[in-house]
Image 1 (cartoon, each protein chain N blue to C red):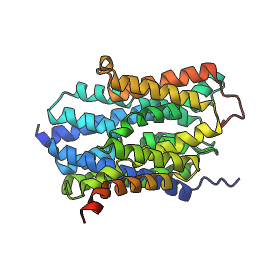
Image 2 (cartoon, chains in turn cyan, red):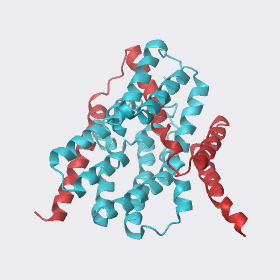
Image 3 (cartoon, each protein chain N blue to C red):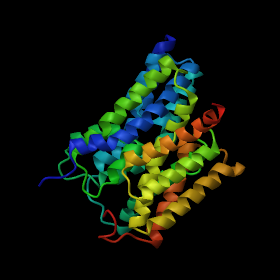
Image 4 (spheres, each protein chain N blue to C red):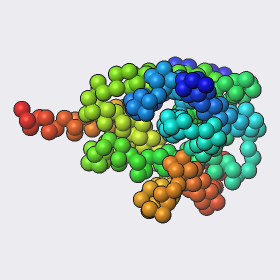
Length: 237
Length: 108
């Protein structure tokens, strides 16, 4: 059986993620150096963690010499959403993934890589997922070290424009999803509403960004699953 | 312990925690889930997470609400007309770049 989910398709699908990561990680590199983290340690952080919000929160704690417990707790809270994503992704992999493949490719589960991977109709192949992880990984590393070393060389006009890239990509995933299966629309509306409430209502100021994502995702998905269950043949299933 | 060693160890601790969160579900839940509720839940999770990440943050990320609105509209139009992810991302970035360059056009 020849799947169209080739390494090359993975690479191609990774291009917009890599572009977005260049700008986000550039900003991370600049911030890290400003906080007093050496450029090489900023690079090490990006190459071993591969997570935006988690890294930023982590180095903020490290910069003021926080404890191990603080660092670990911050990561658990902010990155708990990956647990949901990995669980969702585990249902989409084709039958050829061995235990070791699953253990290794777990490293590359980011918000964006996950989103693009599950956006495919066909089961995900090993080659595809590695192709998909490739460019964003290097983009993330290159952006970080560039930001750390050449900080303020890029004009603000360009950085500000690049910062929309990842969000534009999210929109390009959400909108066709809702057009294809109208059941997705109420889930999107609930999630956006919940997210805006947590963002704008001062009462929820104590809720961190990572926790907010989890709350919104769970509330919207649970309501969606209860009211509009997906039957076989619907959408991607 | 030197400052650098402390930082390196902390960064590696961060990496381990983050990795285990990602790895455990992938490594140990490989059976296909039968429950319609769980299947529906997992089907909706990507859309719900992406929506929560996009709104309202997208309107503040460029540092200018108006340029962000233009970027979002362009991305929306691109998405409705089923352009690929790369094309939508590039169109949106270019639209904001053009918006940012507008003031300079009038200076000349």
